[in-house]
Length: 121
Image (tube, rainbow, N blue to C red; front, side, top):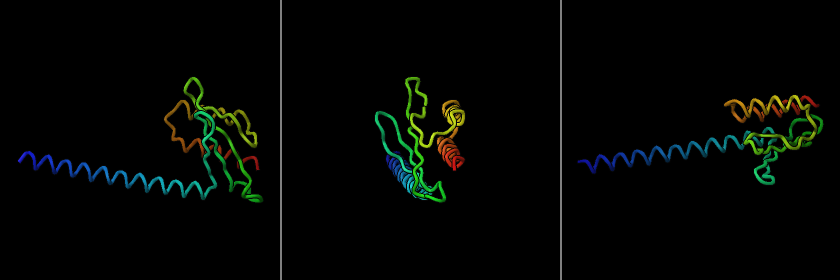
């Protein structure tokens, strides 16, 4: 009957949604564990800003923090507000350009900032 078919469709849809939720939680857990391993921490800043803190970069002082704050400006583009230690402005500019003007994965930007901090050692 039509009702039976609809009920089966609803059950199948519900099962797919539950599987997607499970995958999302597993992906998030995997991501968090990876971030902890590389010493990445996120801190909510003022407004829409987000502070990124890296440790595990300096082999002599693995707990030394390398930080930057990312915000969204009035043109709806990302910008780095604070950076410690200071990175060359052309490095930050090129990473931000790629982030703001392409479909690059956000993680590429984060990895680029980490590599830039590593280059200061």
